[in-house]
Image (cartoon, rainbow, N blue to C red):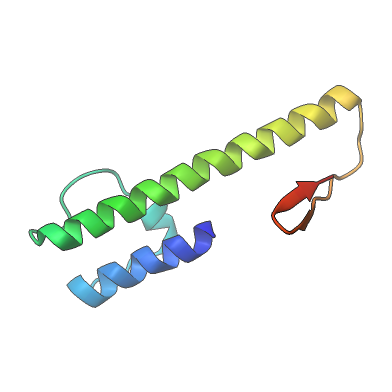
Length: 89
């Protein structure tokens, strides 16, 4: 889901401004004006906020899983199985 938002963000920039952004550039982009077009600026801002939110959530889930593995003393690689929106180890 996060990757699709990054690609969507790249497409918004390319279609409207003619500039190509690498995915790492999108992730490193900080707040600031991208364009004078108010509607485009809002779309860019919302897309970037969504990407940043998803990044924080992913890091939170990863750290929780790593913490549980360390507490359990397990040295095996954890695998997640997700079905119908529910994930379990």
